[in-house]
Amino acid sequence: MPTERTLAIVKPDAVRARHAGHIIQRIEEAGFQIRAMRLVHLTKREAEGFYAVHRERPFFASLTSFMSSGPAIVLGLEAPDAIRKWRTLMGATDPAKADPGSIRKEFGTSIENNATHGSDGADTAAFELGYFFPGIQFAR
Ligand code: ATP
Ligand code: MG
Image (cartoon, rainbow, N blue to C red):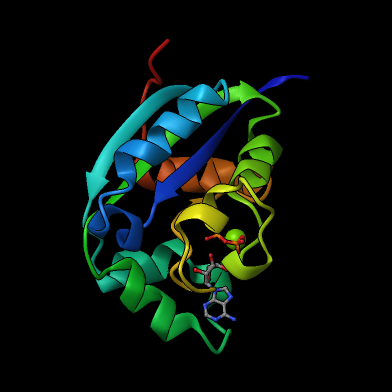
């Protein structure tokens, strides 16, 4: 499996509930290397830019309000097959449908307040890493 990078977010609901440490521990235990990390409190406009692909969706206004409701932690993760591997560890979008043992099952409380984000493909990962870590030389 080729080494990849993906963007993970510990969303505002999980930071507010003080689950960030536990979630980052799960990331490390799963074998990811953390290559970049920041605490960010997004403006509504920054959340809209990040989720621009969803702007026509009925939940866009609510989602971007939620994502700008408090601090979040953005991480650049590296591992073989990182994009798929992180989405598997997170579980399904809706915590109620997420597999037992997944992060969203354990820490998510609704389809919107679902604790974490992960890039869904190579192009999205490149856009999302650049959105939060522009021009960064990732640590090695
Ligand atoms: P993410 O992009 O955050 O990793 P995802 O790829 O599993 O999640 P998307 O379809 O990209 O899911 O939706 C982006 C985010 O929008 C979800 O993580 C969730 O917070 C929110 N969301 C998705 N569907 C709904 C919905 N039906 N109602 C409210 N919020 C939703
Ligand atoms: Mg998505």
